[in-house]
Structure formats: structure tokens, C-alpha cells
Amino acid sequence: MTSINASPSFFQRYSFWLLLISAAVIREIPLISLPFNWLESYFHELSHGLVALVSGGNVLSIQLFPNGAGLCTTQGGSRFFISFMGYTGAAIFGAVLYSLANVNIRTTQVVVALNVALLVLSTALWVRDLLTLIILVVLIGLFFAKFKLGNSKWFGIGLQLTGLTVLLNALFSPFYLVDGRHRGDGAALASLTGIPEIVWVVVWTCIAVAFIYMLAKRDNK
Image (cartoon, rainbow, N blue to C red; front, side, top):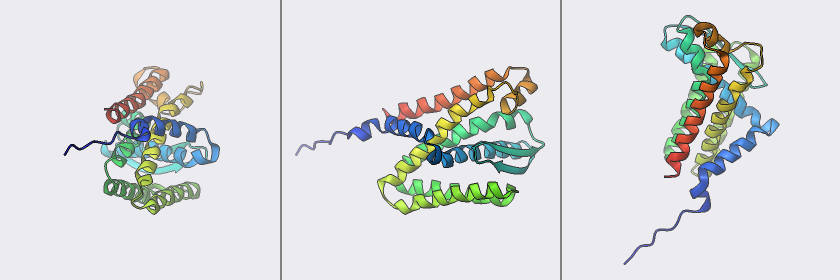
């Protein structure tokens, strides 16, 4: 008896690109895009903090703002790597979220649980203001809401979409540094290395594009 393998559906064949387009659309919808902006900002500031800890420094506080901006106040550690890893870390977190959500339901559940734990731990250790607390509580609530999808296929798709939206935000966020004010991570790296801020913007952009390319290539084998 000869078995006939069913051909993949349109969504299965082009799922990465459909999700990437959906993520790009989400970024343009004011209210709906807010939690995704906050999540990218959280991963950005968390990356600063984690590198500070790994390089021998301390994290004093993490702040998030309604417009999607953020601030991680650190003490000690490697100024170069702390400054460099904000946008890089956000891109890594986005790519990892997308990749692990594509494994199986159990892995997706573990990833969501780890994100909730990370958000709760960050809140307990480094949040010093009410506004940041509210934003992180919203993010925790949204991750909890994903569990409502249970074993539905939308569970993994929702996390994949979240990962790609974070990755796209990490791709475009560095361009906000090109405002002539010479503030932020790019200006800090320019001061430390003598390499112009725009070069660091290009580097961060290339890193995010590289992750998108790798994910697309993997999913379209």
C-alpha cells in the first residue's frame, strides 16, 4: 500500500512571511502595538541589566515608559558591552521566542512560564516606580492570557507572532537614535570607541536583519 503525503497548506508553506507581515501591521496599529513595544523595551533594558551583572556590575533599576522607551540604571560592569547589548539582546529574545514557539506545545508552555517568571523577578528586584510596575503587570497578564489558548494551534502562533514583532521593533528602534541629540546607546558607544553613532545603528540593524534571514531560511527549507 502506497502512502500519499499531504502537501503543506498555504499557511504552512508561507507561515513565516505571513506572520512577519502580520507583525509589521501590528506595529502600525497604535493601541495594539503598545504591549509589543513595551515587551521589546523590557527585553532591551533587561539585556543591559544582565550584561551588567555578568560583567561584574549591578542593576539599580529598570524603568519603562508608555511611549515604549526605557531606562536601565547600572553601576559598574563593562560600559561597552552594557551599551551594545540593549538592541542586540532584544533581537535575540525576539528570535528565541519565535524559534522555541515552533517546537511543540509543551515547549511553548515552558517558554511562556519562563517569561512570566523573568518578568516577576525583574519587578521584584529592579522596579522602583508605579508606572513601570503597571506596564510589567500588563505584560505578565498578557503572557498568562496565552495559557487560555491551551493546546490550540493558536498558542504557538501567538508566541511566534510576539517574537517576530519584538524582532521587528529591535530592527527599527535604533533609527530613533538618528535624531541629532547624541543620546542613548549609540552615543555612549561613540564616546567609548570613537566610532560614529550611525555605524552602531547600522550594526544593530544588520544583526536584526541577520536573525530574520536565518529564521526565514530555516522555516523555508
